[in-house]
Structures are given as C-alpha cells and as structure tokens.
Length: 179
Image (cartoon, rainbow, N blue to C red):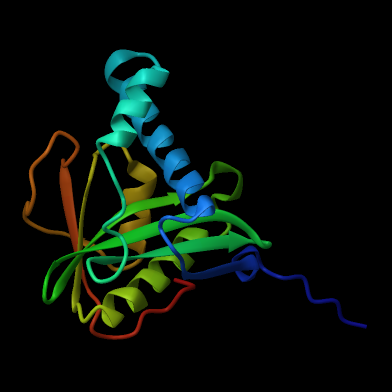
C-alpha cells in the first residue's frame, strides 16, 4: 500500500474574494499590523501603539481592490483563511500588486507562490499585461518571493515614505504556481 502525503503547497486553495468580507478584513488588519510593526521596530525600536495602528488602517483603505478598479484573492490553508493579495488598476495595461500577506504560522508552505499565480490570472482577467509593485527594503522575505516568481527591479513609478524599491513583471503568458 502506498500512502501519498500531500505537499504543503497542495494544502493551499487560492481564489477571488470579496475584499469587504470579514475574512478579508481580518487578513488585511493582520497584514497592516505586521508591516507597520516591522517599520516601527526598525525605525523607532518599538511596536506601533494601538492609536498608530488604527490611524494607519484608516488612512490605508483597500476598498479599491474590487472590480472595476481592482481584484482581491484570498488563500486558504487546510480550509482556513491564511493569506491575501490585492491588485489595483493603474492604467489599461498595468495593475499594481499590494497587500500581499501570508500569516506567519503557514509561511514556507507554498502559499506565497500560490497567491502570486492567482494574482497573475486576476491581472490577465482585468486586461493587464504587466504587474508592478513598490515595497520597502527591509521586507526581504517579500522581495525574495517576488524575485523567485519573475519580478525584476524597475524604475520608480511611485513616491511615498514606504516606496523604496520597485518591481515589475510581464503577465501576458500563463504562470506556474510551484516555482
């Protein structure tokens, strides 16, 4: 008898989701707390205060990550919502990747790759041939994920206090989830 043990990446299911759903909002809150606290620790040596987190969340809405201005995908690991990513339409051929997050407990299980494959499909469904993103230099895990999945550094296309490095990717050809 042969027993097949599923690979961790096989335990992921990623699909389009309503960015306003309770699950999506919980993931977006966890995403924001994670990246904000990393920033505060790096620059101020402390976590953000509850007031700073709430103010930042209020100033960083995600409601445009829905048709016709964008798209949102939710990743489930063994059925539980554990990851998300969003796309924002920039122009007729370009979308911006944002809010990429995998909860710490399931990092390293292939969820990031599955998210990015779903994002590629969502971008194509929006008519885009290119995905761009900006990120911070200290988010090294995210930058490595993007590089592994075909993103390359590009010239700056945006400004802001958290835009320190920019990436782009052509998505005119179908992607593979298990890179």
